[in-house]
Length: 183
Image (cartoon, rainbow, N blue to C red; front, side, top):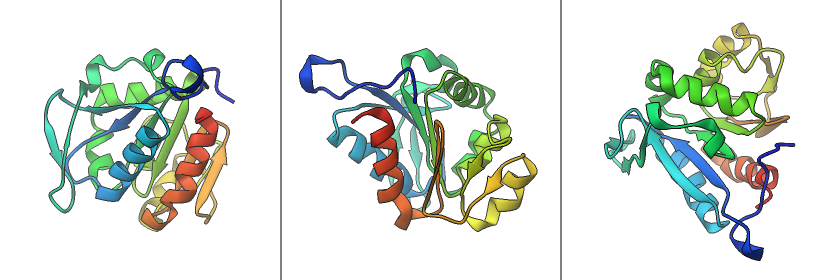
C-alpha cells in the first residue's frame, strides 16, 4: 500500500490530491469518468498537461483544460496519477516532465493507473518491468517488450500499478483506484 494513502474530505482529513494527465486526442470517457468518480469520492483532482491553462481536446472534440503544466508538477504533492488512453499517451510519452512525474509517483509508492493506450507512457517511464498489467490489445507487444507481464483482465492490480483495457472496464479500474487511495 502507498505511504500517501489517505481519506477524502470526511473526518476532517485533507482531501487526497490526484493528477489526471491531459493531451490532445485523449479518450473522452477515460479522462472524464475518473475525474468525476474521484471528485465524487472527495478527492482533489488536478489536470496536468504540457502547459497550464490550455484546453486539450478529446478524440470527439470534448475539451479538458489543464490546471498545471507538467514541468511544474511534483510527485510529492500527489497521492496518484491517472493516465487516460486514446492517442494522447503517444504525445504524453514525448513530454520529459510528464514521464518524470509518472516515474517519480511510482517510485514513491503513489497510485499509477492507466487504461487503454495509457501504458505507452508507463513504458517510457520504465515502470512496467517485471510487473503485471493489462491494456488495449494494440499496444500489448510494446508493453511486453518494456518488460511487463500481460494479463487479459478488466483490471490488473500489481502493487501501486493499476491498469485496465478499454472504457467498459472503467468501473472496475476506478473501484480499485478508490480502494487504493482509501476513498
